Length: 314
Ligand code: ADP
Ligand code: MG
Image (cartoon, protein in one colour):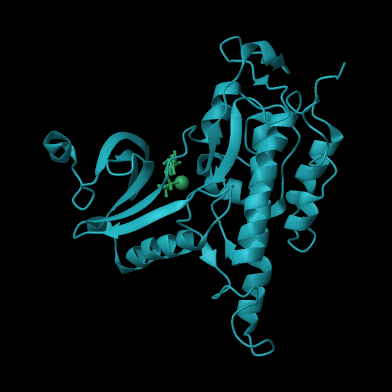
């Protein structure tokens, strides 16, 4: 209708009704919107050109180019890219549940079963990115992990672990074999820092084998490992509610990371299984050559423990 059009502050998005704001970054705002022709709900990342230099503009185009190639259940689906005089728009499927980050805040920390449910799906996304597409994400963190919610049926909720803080909710878990804690499908978002390490889709590094420069071979070899490290940081955070490396002072933080100085802090880690800790350890390995690869991670024993007990048959 006319009013809707008038309320839409963004040129070039006239077929959308912009509703709420979903997120805000340094250079972008993400808005929920409804496609008035298809009734499809989307999330639109709006980037104002004015504040961007030439390199940053290139980076936005690259983000869209990378997203456009991706087709995986655990990655936010790209819908469309638009550009007008003042703005870039990256239009994506709407992920209703929001950030995993907020679930950690809400529940303090997550159970091993729910953490596994989440991190396994992130692993599947990375396997696809690394092995099928040749893209490293480079900005893996709970803020960039979104999820589709599944309803929690109170009668089926099994209380797992009680938070000491009475103001925090308890994480409930489904007993239906599908998922837990209201978190269904997990979707990796935000390809703003991602990098293509292959330049085509043929699963081979760019250039003729043997003629490829060392920096390309090295880049290809090392850069995937940065996602595996971040995966370890995310898993650590899911399990205990705080990140493995933290310091107010950036130089101290940098030193801790460089040395891989983290601990399984008591009492928060006391009840967490040896299997979960071993999985974290193998991801948070300083030497990138000894760090878990995506395939090693996906066959980790803890990751493959059966998580949701099926109800007994009569
Ligand atoms: P930035 O580069 O500013 O971090 P993101 O792509 O990470 O931009 O988006 C910022 C925030 O907007 C996300 O952390 C999330 O809360 C929200 N968001 C982004 N994409 C979607 C989406 N497809 N569905 C729902 N929320 C989204
Ligand atoms: Mg982000």
